[in-house]
Length: 613
Image 1 (cartoon, rainbow, N blue to C red):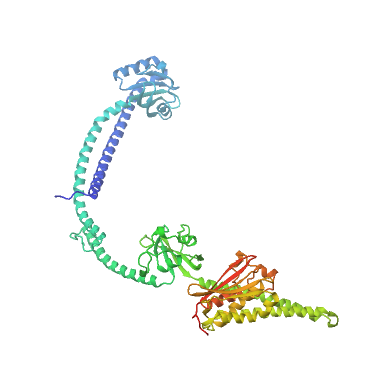
Image 2: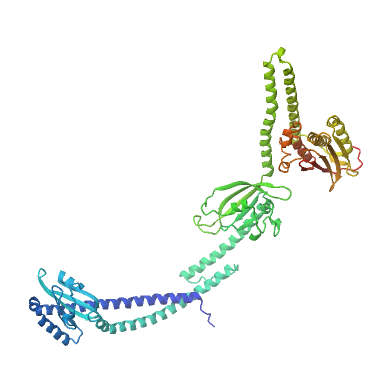
């Protein structure tokens, strides 16, 4: 059973057939047009010959303006021609003197007729147009009678266009019969050519289809020396090259997956539509996107509809049709993560997508590289803020001391009186503040530097708090503050460094006393919480406004109460607390209500209960 012909066969057949038919039709039309032009020219010459005869015959009557004779002559000529030829005698002013098919008296002036104007100007004129007199399409030929400087008029000879067309119909029918024969022959020839070419091409196509479906064992028939045989050989060579390239691509793919899995930086690639094509596990982790597939492969299989990037990241992945350059867009982006926000350095650039044509016309995607710079950003910010704040805080007491010293130098000791004592008090007060700032800076620097190792030991909070009470006893008594201690049984032992723990509690109690009104209370309490001990220092002082609670742990930051109320602190106490607690593998929280008081909770690893160290 023969195989049914495919679309290519019919396209090939239709192409050949239409081409041959078009050529045949063009030839017939060309021949018919040439015949019509030839016949039209012959007819024009015939009408001109008739006109020449009439001009010679009736030139004298035209010169005399003998309308009666000219009218009779026109009627006689019209009767002899049985209406096929129309003869008209027209005076120089356009008056019709005689016409073979109409009454001259009823005809309007013909001075504006194209053929008449041409004949009057050049001696001969012709035109084809509709005659309003007899209601037919006519072909006109006109000849001037007399000299151009003093013409007598015009002799016009015409024939209906229908009569001309009828005389060419027989020839046209013959031409179209020939065209039909040519078309039939062209169709048979096209059918044979299509069958001849499509059969071999169909076999090559079948082989190409097998190769495209992954069957690299298929080979095309290479027999012959024509173009189809060359195509088959090229297809076989392509099959061999494809096998080699697939092996190379597979090796490169495995290498890429290994490298992406090892990268600490996140990598995201998007196509020209902004859809994610590739993303490694590091990028998914930084962006907080759930992983699909096997994360061990190094590539996160993430459906496009599941990739909800932060707006800044999504904007960097969108292709900019106007940009289309190799420039790199770089910005820092803060991303919300469970527990704490992180800062990443995002760098995006255009990439040319593989297999998208020439570089000038290729589709472009976006490549995004994410680097976690949270710690670096925090360190840089801390150092910058530290330099600025330390300079400001140190300048204030130094300026006051310098001003007091300058005043002392300019005073006369005999006349100064109490001014000397007041200036010395200023120097003493600001020297104490300067000493306190330098001491706190040294404590903070020692903790942050990491040069000293603070080894944790098992400590009893009862013993540490007892020493604390002794150190603050005079200040507590002077301000009539009630210092309460509530050490919960089972929450007395912690794993911490004694020096750091004392530094933390000293700063917290000092702050609590400083910002509590006389007659108030300060409480130190403990409780157990998830294998940790929570140490709480609470007071009923002025409290901290909500908008300031996030900043009180910054270096040199002081709440408004510190400026207008109690004795001004260094602004480093809570910063020291935060770093000291972090060095002991703990954490610190704050809760406060303005006007009611503040609670600061320090969470430390629990120690062995009953240890006497």
